[in-house]
Length: 255
Ligand code: SAM
Image 1: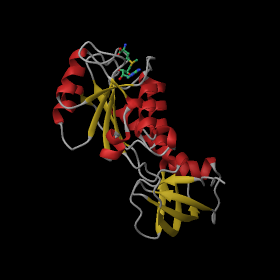
Image 2: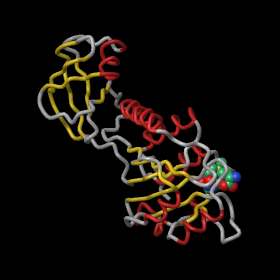
Image 3: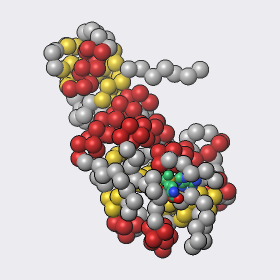
């Protein structure tokens, strides 16, 4: 029997006391779309990992006030901390990628600027995507928000080298320089999720990574991986990689 996800509302300030005020889109969603009434009970989350049962105490024109009734830490995060470094696709496909990455449990998206990138994310675009993260988290039950970092140049990302994460670069088929490892034939002993809970995986632009970009990454300790014989669009490749690396979807991704 599957639990039905109750209506959830995001509070942008950490919830500390007994009284909470929702404003902006969250207040509109609760008051105008869901037609909440005083006394209704809803679930709030503030991105810190907790869920709060709260009852509506006042419905104003621009805000809704609630009283917290109970609080519980509810962990719906993946066991692997997966960061996807993605040369973002265009418009609607970008939003779709973010929504699905939240659902799958990706921890962080780093938009990358590669040599063949055509999409340049502006601050307003990033803000819109952060709103998509909230909407998707409300729907799927995540109590921590997937982070969307500011865009970074591919060269900078591979030069950074910080942390002890396993670093994977998705690159189709064989390369003249030695070829990509098929991700599906990794043995359990070398599975990233066994070795380290932190994985950084990169997906290139529609035109692909250049050989120079792939070789620089390999020289910096990244592993080139293939996702099979078909060429996937950026968002398909990103989500296929995420689904295979995250271990919360059952045996099919127990690589
Ligand atoms: N012609 C480009 C090339 O050869 O790289 C295709 C780029 S593909 C549309 C966009 C990105 O998705 C690639 O840079 C790669 O990161 C990832 N990708 C797509 N299909 C893949 C596959 N079969 N194996 C590994 N990565 C793949």
